[in-house]
Image (cartoon, rainbow, N blue to C red; front, side, top):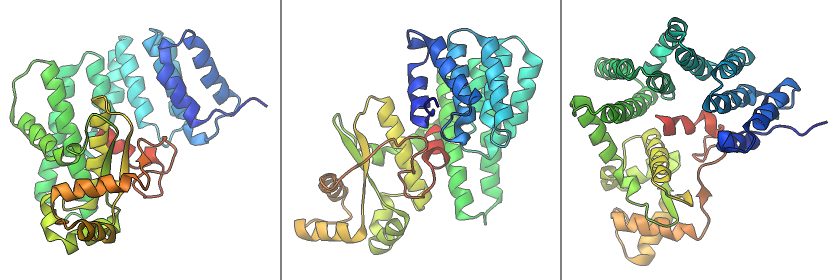
Length: 328
């Protein structure tokens, strides 16, 4: 029997893409594995087809790319929003505007509920509809901010998810407006403030190998109880802490950072380090030196594979846990 197609191999093919000497062979490898039932994880069937569609799209074969995106929707009907967005974008680029717009418009409500759904406006903007993409981003921000104002007793998880969505939508809108040469407005200012708020994590990054200090949920809560002064250095909720780290690592990677990773802090470990060094555990320099001291004990490399267990310790696959936070 031919070799199974793993998620790592799909990732590798996606990275090669049309830059490969023979992109058609890569497409054939992906589609052949799907046809023959050789995808190692059945949940990756749609992913394999979408990678093949992307290679074809970049090579200019929009019609065949559309066929594969349509097939990805049929293969995984319970998890097909991204595939539908890709299909909508392809329809727009094939001048089937009514069909494409209908597909994307049906997905528009996800912008207000799903932190990972910014791909919907990506497809709009990349298909020459930047003005409408900005309208949708603005509408989603309006709706989420209004919801946070009116739902004062929302759960902590709901508040954290709203914060992630506001950050992602505001940044995407800001970047798109800059590309269009538009002047700053109120939401652009919000995007700037939110980006500045994440600089505490980015400050730990330098030109060489870089690690960030991660606190598991129990340790994070215990840290803020033991040293209330650290509330000025960290967000109030652990969900926001791990989301900030994921975004910071994505930004560092985008700026050319290499050998990125995380080290895991503990309250007892920080207390012992501060005692041994005669330093203040609430001082930013102490936290940086503590993180450096943990480097010797081992670093969790970032990013994990899509199907690997997430770095945050949730036990969930990365693609279902913190990866969406990097896209927000």
